[in-house]
Length: 222
Image 1: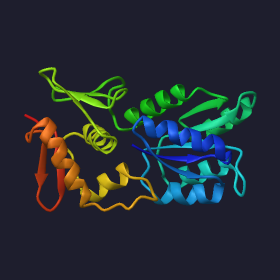
Image 2: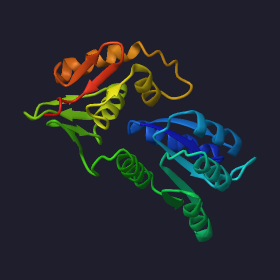
Image 3: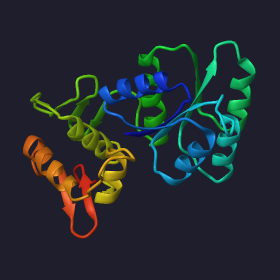
């Protein structure tokens, strides 16, 4: 899953990015409201973490502009613990959740997962599709026979995104956008390599190629 982190406290944002990366997220960071508004409007994020106290343009204004433009990406706002009015204003502007500083990274990760699943109409809890269960805590996958396969970071991000969009045609460019961050060399042809690796671990029947369009994960609907 790809996340935009908007926070002007650089040490804090670097630590959050490091922690999220360990959990299989790819993270783009910006430290001001103008860049945040541009990135949030132009890039296909699965969620945004937005601090409200930003230089150049207030976070609340950025949030309002996104929603006015029809951007429905799930957004968690960060507020000072005693700034209850910011929470209210944030919800009125279209925020989906809030987290007061200081916070535990485990809570942020849990809230992100809930928002992303909910926005993509997935059940909250373990991610399971056609007998396949994703162990997100340990970045592994278990098949219906109980066989367990460990995943690399990229394999995990790719499989998680595909499992969250079963039986949907996913182009290589779309997969690339959600598996790599903004600064990466996003060569969509590399996706073929990781698809092959996943097929070696899961079998060929769960990931089908739709020639000229992309890939479909999951068994066909009856």
